[in-house]
Image (cartoon, rainbow, N blue to C red; front, side, top):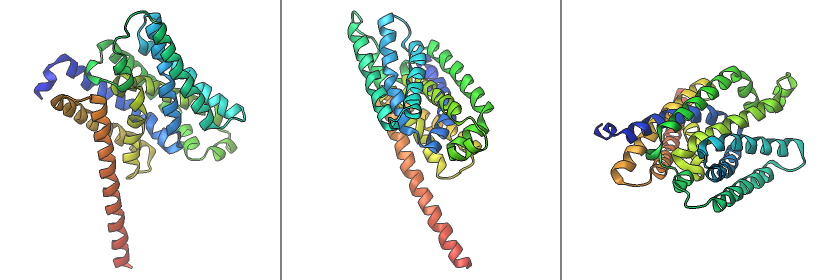
Length: 277
């Protein structure tokens, strides 16, 4: 526990908690609705907002918020209102966002500080100002997810049936994409643009092997994400390695372990049912 006597470690601990609240909520719908690669496209497109922030001399995280939302809506509009397929729309926005980010950084005079942390993440360098931004975005995500919980659950499991019973599927789909965009912004300082897709999807994927109840899945995803993120943070501190990489590698290892545990439990139940019959 002595590692948390340092302010940067306490900030990192708070960041781990805040980021996994967003991931647990939004990541659940991302995994169920199978829009993992959309979140990857939004995260890479958000790099354009990071570059624009450097160019304007403003906080890159603040500028990344509207940029990420615009990218998410662009993917949704292109895929829903044109004949262009969804994966093509993701590829276009993905590449354009990265290209704009590189362009803005090249146009910015001098050296771009902390650029590497935005790409690959560094939870140990999260400032207090970013914690307030994360808290505000978390509160907004919690409110929206609470208000539209039933609708999000419905369109995630069966979009066609939801449309038949009168749920505004397209509008809610765009709202969900905006929540993904906000989650991406929260994640950028923790694991970076490159690794966002993992932290957004792995905790929910781990917990989905043991429950299909949405509320339980959200809570379990948050708890799993917090525990593994803090464990990866401590591991990276003592081994002096990249915090973002350590968190994702540990989370992937937990996913593999959960897969084997689920397989063993399934075989045990199947064997037990045979003995009963």
